[in-house]
Amino acid sequence: MLDLTAKVHDESRQGEAYAPFVNDPTLYRKKFYIESYGCQMNFSDSEIVASILNTEGYGATRNAEEADLVLLNTCSIREKAEQTVRKRLTEFRKAKENKPGLLVGVLGCMAERLKAKFLEEEKLVDMVVGPDAYRSLPGLIEEAETGQRSVNVLLSRDETYADISPIRLESNGISAFVSIMRGCNNMCSFCVVPFTRGRERSRDAFSIVAEAQDLFNRGFKEVTLLGQNVDSYYWVNEAAEATTQNATGDAITFGRLLEMVALISPDLRVRFSTSHPKDITEEVLTTMAKYENICKYIHLPVQSGNTRILQLMNRTYTREWYMAKIDQIKQIMPDCGISSDVITGFCTETEEEHQDTLSIMEYSQYDMSYMFFYSERPGTLAARRYKDDVPEEVKKRRLTEIVNLQNRLSRESNERDLGQTFKVLIEGDSKRSDRDWMGRNSRNKVVVFPKGDAGYKKGDYVMVTVTGSTQATLLGHIQK
Ligand code: SAM
Ligand code: SF4
Image (cartoon, rainbow, N blue to C red; front, top):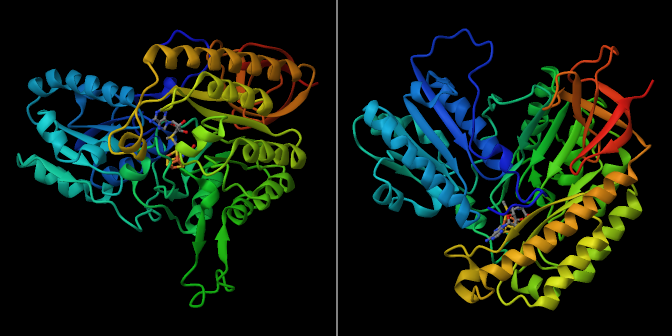
């Protein structure tokens, strides 16, 4: 692990386990324990799994030792992510010896990538379940209970779990993820996602709006619309003629969906992630500008700043095209925060090409980036076509340069906020002190400030003036 101060990846939530059902008086016959790894999509899927298991009479526990069923929802995006899961699995060996009936299941992308091979490689695993097969979990558990190890890794063209209401167990009760689509049709050459999560499909727009409305009714104040590539969201109500709900039968684009969710209430903040630069449209940008409650923040992964490398990555845009997109965003929303994902040391990347990545980061003035060095994934286009020929120490040195630059950009961005006043949604106590609130502004920056005697509570909006900052946090005080 690199000892770098900037956020290399959102490590804080990796392996997070669910809290038990809060305020749930039911005495459950059986308990499950679930840990999630990887992207937000996996965390969101674990909430769907929790809902499916709950209808089967399982209650959640945060204590693996009292569980009858242990599930790991896994990630395959980099080799390190897979190694983490393998290591974690060995830790359940002892638990299984102590409790013979305990079932261990592997869910998500690693399950999909390795399929039945997983059962051969990891003897303690009883179930291997791909991301489109969670409805079959009860049957698979039953099978595993008879001693039959079970696998379902079928990918689907239409599964969106639209009718399943996720159980939000880890939640602060203020912000929630809402999955709007699954899979990915882009074939970025480095990426395993199209193989592990299948074809792209968009979820019924009305079920999305209903879920967001229900969250708002239950006191949530922020929803993040989730997908690998939200801007290619596209849903047509085929039943439009039969019902009057969407009488025109128009296709619903992402811009339209954003508007539908924003219209639930001006007090409900709307965020989204992730945007592929090639797909984010002017319609989306102008919709963002039009509604105050759509947060002015875009995660727009660049991956590389060099056109030749972008071509090898199959990203379908050039350096210049990406820069023009940044210009367009800033022209439509001058105060919009932008963040990125960067991969360093991709196949054949030269020193000059690496410099192009540094300069595009500088041009884009990212508030934050997730930064990785290239990790070859079996079966991807890049693994089949190109040689992973940048030595590891060069990859790491380039990553350090990128991280150092991002640290400076984040610091400068925070310094520009000094003296400014932002509307902040209070998410809870700050990590360091229960005398301070922690919240976020529209640009997704974390703001910490003393509670004082103003009488605010979690979920309130409050105007905060920035008086200082650390690397990743703005510090301020409530505007009198
Ligand atoms: N769909 C999103 C997108 O297109 O930006 C996110 C995909 S992935 C879950 C998150 C990030 O992991 C990618 O943006 C990329 O920077 C990184 N990533 C994916 N494959 C990788 C690989 N083989 N090696 C290193 N980083 C990788
Ligand atoms: Fe992977 Fe590219 Fe799809 Fe993102 S858009 S999930 S990086 S293939």
